Length: 263
Image 1 (cartoon, helix red, strand yellow):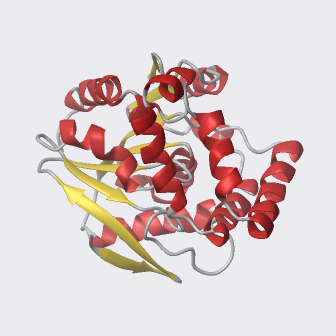
Image 2: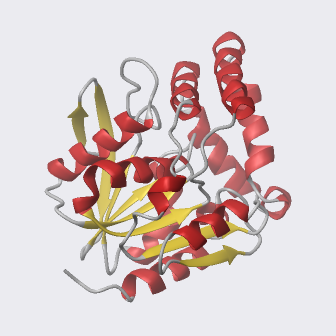
């Protein structure tokens, strides 16, 4: 995998395919391998750039929490590294949080947005305290218990019951993060800004995706506030819809991207 340096961290990424640039941002606490089943279906028509976000996979945490500002700056550095002037950006969960910050700071690079299994609302005092508490707990006790809780909470019951191979793949990705990495990302997400005001500023084509086993209220809020956006609910999927139902996710993504004007 190629690497680049962004401020205080060395970051890894993968590139595959040919065509217009599509940057794919994975969820916490996974890595770029999250996209492999979808990438197989898109790389024939698009050039896919898939980073390991700061502290995930092979990428370093750097100094202090992995804030959304740092993640957006990392993404801008990746665009410079790969000479990407404009691209289609897809973000799941923390990948979506990163794209809201990226839009606020570097929107000239964005030709279209896909926001999947993410939310624009800020952390509540309760959820912020929960993230900081989980960071402390992982540092004290290690990550094994945290990982099993994540798998139970974020994947569809259908996936957990019928697709142990997908559950195991997610577990292996999670296990690549150290307790320090997990804590640094939780601390960064605890302080992420409110992105609801940002939604009305988005003036590029946008697609909102969400798994049917995840609450859809946040996805509907994004659809309502982003002018001209479309929303789809992916059946038999939870927070990791692209990994759980890659064929449906890829079909929706491909249909959206194929309909966009080429630069």
